[in-house]
Every structure is written in structure tokens, then in C-alpha cells.
Image (cartoon, rainbow, N blue to C red):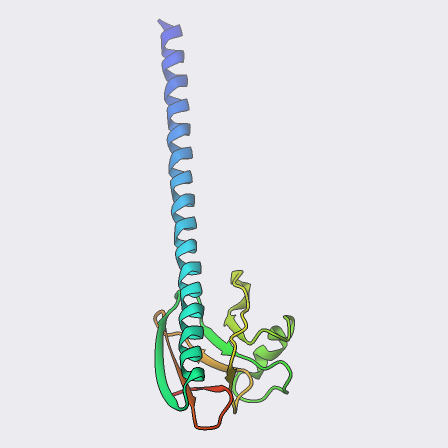
Length: 158
């Protein structure tokens, strides 16, 4: 009689350990899928922004206010010209951006999220360096414009 109770007890303990393992694995898998969704969102932002810049760059004149969705863990989207001196409201971040290649001009802050820095082609920006846009509730608004005889598209805040 005692021997049967020990086997049942061991089976129950083993079942509980397996359930805990499967639940932990399920939470891990869900977290990875959520992180993948954020990475896809950033990639879509970069592709859509470059497409909008290219369209305006190919034309003669235009102006647009663009709205994009980004993960809520991103606080700022910053454009930086690392060949120019820092000035403006976000100069504290300039040193952190300097650690990367001079070709890159688009950064996401905070930098510790594992996102790549990007080069957006055909853009210019005047004023602040870095020029940063706040991400509010997962949304960011960025203005782009180009006037006659300008070679590059200007990134502006509206």
C-alpha cells in the first residue's frame, strides 16, 4: 500500500514540473513574438519613410506631414549629421550617436534596444543636430519638404 502512494506522489510531482516548464516556455514564446512584432514595425517605418522621401526627392516641389506607428518602447526618432557639430535641444544624445558609423543618420532612442541604426538617403535637415521627434503612444509625426532647385529633401517638424 505504501509503495503505490510513493509512485503516485512522484507522478504528481513530475506532472507539476512539466506544467511549470510548459507555461514558462509559453510565456517565453509569446515575448519573442511581441519583440518580433516591434522589429517588424521599425522595419516598416524605415521602408515607408525612405519611400516617401524618394518620391518627394524625385519631384520638383512638395511638402508632407507623415505619421507612422512605432513600438511604444521607442521614445525618440532622431536624425543626426555626424559630420556637423551638435546644437539644439537634444545635444546630450549626440555623444551616444557618435559611436556609430558616419554614414548612418537615423537613430532610435533609447539605443539599448538592439535596433540597428539606419542611413536614410536624399535627406537634409537644418537647425537642431540631432533633430529628434517624440514618439507618443506609439505614433510619430515627421515633416518632409522640398522646394524648387533643392537637391535634398528637408526633414522638418510641423
